[in-house]
Amino acid sequence: MCGRYATTRSSGELSALFESSDDTDGLLGPDHNVAPTDPVPLVRVSPQGHRSLCVGRWGLLPHWSRSAAGAARMINARAETVATSRAYAGSFSRRRCLVPADGWYEWVRRPDGGRQAFYLTPRDGSVLALAGIWSVWGSGADNRLTFSVLTTAALGDLAEVHDRMPVLLPPERWSSWLAPTDEPERLLIPASAEWLAGLEIRPVGAAVGDVRNDGPHLTARVPAVTPQELTLF
Image 1 (cartoon, helix red, strand yellow):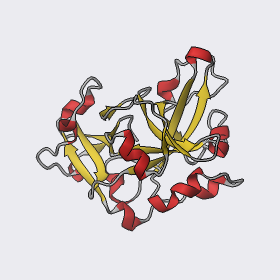
Image 2: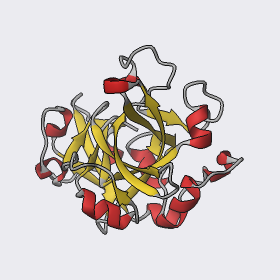
Image 3: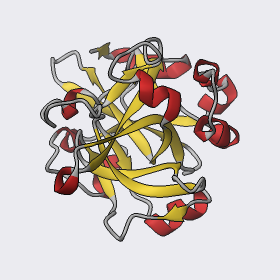
């Protein structure tokens, strides 16, 4: 999975969709070009035991990290090793979250040497829940909630644009992902082929490649390019 995605729903809409409290304090706005370390919504279980929609920064910082400098390299955790990784294992065991997204971006090499961006998103416009893990880093004014998205081997047509994909959680699996368990590895169940077939692989323009760009035009379809014509990165 590349390091960009879109999340544009309001906190009110997300809290309704995920049946959570809204603890974002009005800090969220639509973002069509989320990049590492950006503040974005996530859903976790609060200390009081209910679902909470809050703001986290993309790039997990373990509590023992000496600085925040490495956050941009910690945006994705591999499902195959998350349970044994020093950086991620504690969060995977006890601090799992849902990361709301409209879709995510991947890039494929064109025959001319350039790059073609694709936006992967539900055809029906429904929300995606990416499997995430979170941690709190720092203290006082430097205290921040951080998270990573779990990735796994790409399945079905998604393998045409990248060999990795986020771990996607259909709505019926949201509760189990958030609930305490002694065997979190059993939660890493691939989404069904039928559910994955509901995802569109949409060619989009080059503007998304610049993190300074934002807006709905980034997800607009451009003249058709099939992934089969291109080369994976």
